[in-house]
Image (cartoon, rainbow, N blue to C red):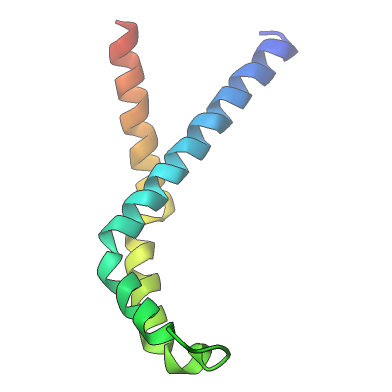
Length: 90
């Protein structure tokens, strides 16, 4: 495989991975909407004090988001994507 072809394939792979990461983040935000709302409610009207006043809500939100945005989830999404692409080719 030539350098140009390999570069194109890597670019496509990178674009696909970026799209999958974006989809993963969107799903996480949707799944963690309750925690996002709690954090937003706590943070409302605060400036610097948000750091210590909303520590519990921030921790809960981050724990929820991490369930849906980690390497394992991304790898599963990549596998699903590859399976769908294989089905299209056959």
